[in-house]
Length: 555
Image (cartoon, rainbow, N blue to C red; front, side):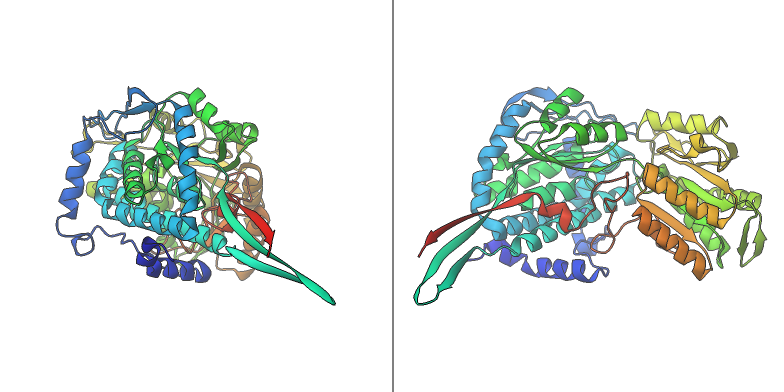
């Protein structure tokens, strides 16, 4: 008999299965914070729910609690003062292992139904989560709401959908009958049990604490595993809200809530001990190359799914929509002050310039015009503050200062500090745009996280394509863009991205941007270049998180 929550959400699951098979646009979670969708009082209720957390301990009733911890500093300069349970990580691992027995017993349908209910409930908390994401990451409100809540929920649902599809391929039982000629046939009954591999660890990042956490969280959970979320020390609240909701839904359905716990620590040694624990069988990580590489090298007992740094790039060969192209790139470079793993950093332009609908544009003109497009886009303060948000960390601000100094290249557009009257403590920076030669690889051929981009002068378009491919293969990239009116150039670039195994966006000039990714349609990362060893989401992202254990007996 099907689990009641599986039946409750079957229509959503069926639609999601159709979406991942057809790759068209679909989402069950509205990205617009509309009272018509979320309720007339949802905005006020969500903000009040967020504010109720500020200045108070966040109770989770987890095992092994030793005390309280937490020192989040909002990029907007507002006080948070939330304390979280400090728990012995060994106790969390042991409790998760115990809880997995009941989780296995509900079966794939039960796990899927409960995960769908969790996402349904999280969606109802979208305003609360949006405010938590905004105040811990420095994102602007609309982005924090969309990326932090419905878009993150989309990615979680996508993972659940793939997990269900892979598990549904495994029959629960079979009768095996082998003819023996004149003798009676050999008959056996075989049962197949889907068993989670073990505890999953999800290490969150400071810029997208839900969007980058939900895929691994729900992929591990839906396939039968316990999950420990280790949030970034400066973006704990969104994870805490998520964990509390998950634990509540689990309890309501007779599942030990310790199946999902949160480990808050600012000690790397604790994270390392968790990640290398013999009972931890999967690790999901988004962050720096240094720690990501450490995880891949040392977590021999676990499958590591890592999204690391890369150098996203755009090749500009020609365009029939010059102003629209500049406007599109200006938005891309400005959104959340470039603090996205998909933001373009290197813009490759031929030395002889490009052909456009406004005539020939020299390399210098392209540099100057892009700088003006950024200035024009951010000229209205209300637009600038909404789009830019705030610097998530002082390290990012220091990189901007270095770029502004001219030590990395010729400054085409200097970053400016803006004063947000609503948040006087926010460090708001506009993008810095630099010009350099292709030979200046030390400047542009490493990720410089933040609103820092280079217009790189290449010998010609062919050299630009070759350089883009080399960047991807040696340093990694999640996104590559191309502007060209030539079919031959588009084909050459397409083949280069096939070899480099990176997603390509061609001639974006309207409301789609190279640094945006749509769940159920776009694969976020390919797992085929150094920027990431996995994709959000495909079958490979879920299939290695469970095992099939059979038993057989004669009939």
